Length: 325
Image (cartoon, rainbow, N blue to C red; front, side, top):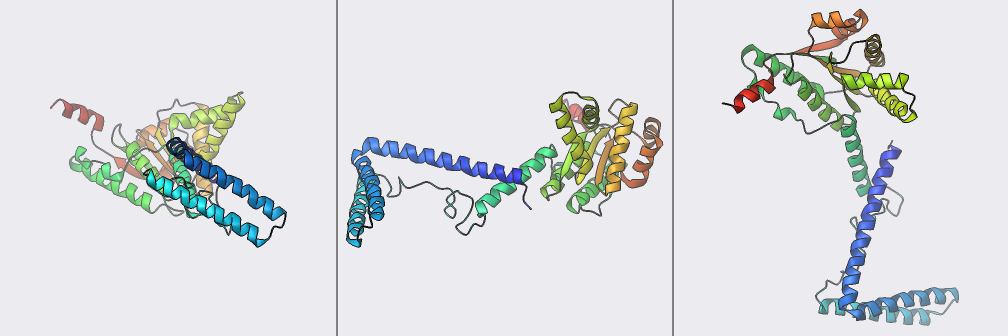
């Protein structure tokens, strides 16, 4: 079933295209009339003939009258074509401009079925919304450079890359939850965003949330008195709890309070209970997680998530060193 909001945006896009085409045709007409006034006169005569057709139909005129109108109309059209050619214009230069000849930019065919051009626009709107919801950029698994890792760290990172790639291409109800765990600057955020890009491209709903932003949304939903802020944060919380894949990035960078502890447990427990999949990335070790979060949260992270360990040196530091070599 199509999303009504996205379909409306796709229709609006077609409407804008019709307006652009109409404006282009009007510019052409203005240019031709300025150079060849006789064509303007011929168009005026054709419009007058249309009025005669309507009058003849209303008065039940005989076939002879209609045939005469048709003859005059044909002469005027041929005159226009001759004049256009004589002044270097194509015969169809003043025809209606359409981007889709099947539906003439209306989005629907004569039998009422949706045209392929509108379906294509709808899919484009759907992909755009998925990308915006997941806060996606241009991250790609092919751009993940294993050259930054050496020795045993490279073995860990080869496994992490392969696991994230496989998770993305096979994502579905049977997918695991993932805990991406390791130091700063090792590629956790990059790989999680690569996963988001692939999964959203396959039609699943994805939400990418830095931990600080996620807990801020829960706080605003509970305490904000501004209606717009409350509505916006409520939608964000709803998305976090119910999307097919939630990526909670940089867990541990937020200020830990009783409220954030409760919000984190709510996120994990609600999604696990509903069978929704989650990726959590953190710089914290197992010991640091246990020290920072309540046992119920740690139990879910350790028992319900598959851990991918990230090792190596901070890539940003390596890049800085290489700049000065």
